[in-house]
Length: 89
Image (spheres, rainbow, N blue to C red):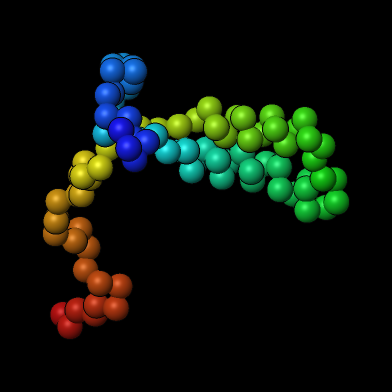
């Protein structure tokens, strides 16, 4: 084509869904970094090998993200009254 865009998608592997996205598991990422930050902030900065090891550990923990697939919790009645509620009995 003139614009340089390839129109044929035959080279794309069928095992991968184009609509599926993967994101880093942030909870796991925070847990890994929480173990490392105190050491790094006290002046023991990591060498390149350790830093790459930590980043690789974070990279391996991904979760599948599907757009529009949220399941909000249904509305339910409160199990107890407000904390400032005072009965006049």
